[in-house]
Length: 281
Image (cartoon, rainbow, N blue to C red; front, side):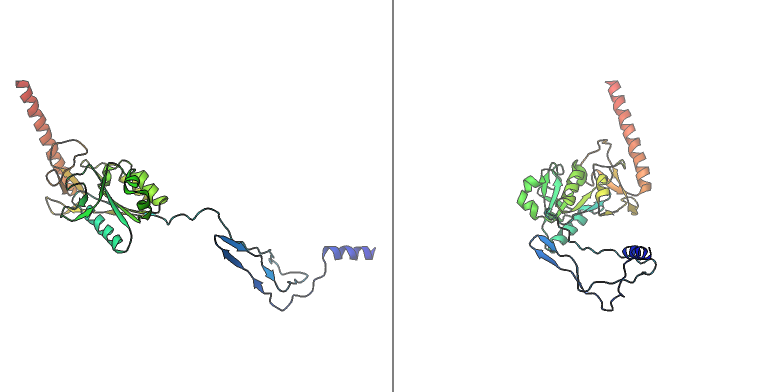
């Protein structure tokens, strides 16, 4: 009976030799063969001997090392989107040109796009209000850029500048695709609001996609303070009305509110005069 109990104890808790003093050696090899990582398991030169009753809270887990390999082709480098907004005459195009020229000076391939609706200074270049020019491609939409620029040339591009971005209805889709999937850096300049201080085009839609947003200000044409808004000086009510200083001026909040009141009063007066003239005919 005693012998049977002793044999059962032996099976449940076999005797262990004292822990070896020699430190085990660890070897791990990971060889790179073209596109594949080849991994080899760990080998221990000396087995580890444990005492009969290990200290409390001591857990021994098997160690396994692996190199993860994916057969998918490497994705392009991550793109970026930088947005420049502000009222008219705030220097948006100037800021865009400086950044494009800086990127080009750093050895990156750049291209600039503008809407073909803006014909104020010609279609082959973007021009600041100070007269600085840079060659560009004028397009009706951004989705046609890759085809017109050339697929191979597009692949070589690093940076794409977009001026007067409020005129492109497909701005969001183009920027998302170019940055997220094609690895391009986009520098986008445009009006964030129209003359009614409402969202203009799709410029504000790409803010959630942007890495950075720069809000520029102009100088109020009436008092010299910082101007955040664009005041239309004519009675024209169309949202999209391309023009320069003859149609728009940058103003502060005070003069925007008072100026809008003046413009609205002038519009009502003109309409009433037209109505009177029509009644006398």
